[in-house]
Image (cartoon, rainbow, N blue to C red; front, side, top):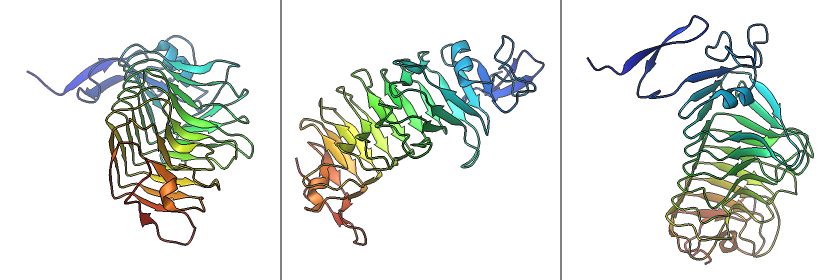
Length: 307
């Protein structure tokens, strides 16, 4: 008889009954830096929450295609390698989900060097509900996406303390088609920030939806000025660029041949010229986008957006 549920016996004595729709394939790994009494990065651990791995990096190294990693509430971890990726997510279909609410969300600190980052090279990688913090000045990028189908949901990017910052939170290569960036919180107060999200390659079918992006970005909060990106969706974002400047497309800046839809975005740009200079939406269709360029004033509809 067919059933949506199935059983999985795991090393350590735990027997799980799982929903096949949620976990159709692969193993489940557990990570908890707090549980040092029962956890370890040794073989035989990580397969149940009572005997977890202590680091995300260990779980990633153990994982295979379509595995699922849970980071437990309160988990903290520092990663960093000079001149290279601090953590490489190279396994296709690997999903990492942080557990815990606003104050107990797992925290990953990228520290030690300004040229270290999280690298995504496995197709269909997913990261959900994780705080990613900068622990060093002017880290070039937090996440480098070099694979198709990457999903980033419900994560928070912020500075660990004054003077420790990401210049770019999410950077792509030409391989990053079909990316979804949804429901994230991107903030920086450091003046060295250039972009929140930068699409370098010709990344098609990218969805950037329902994010909060704030900082003094010298280029733009969302930038794709190197190559045309087709069938983009930039929808429902709240964008604040606090960098003062004239005629700067500081909220959204796209190369001319890009296509798709830009709709229902609320934006603020510290630009003393006019609200139209805050956005260059290229050839995207546009609907109900609002822009303000002065605190205390209601945003106006950007009925005509620069191209």
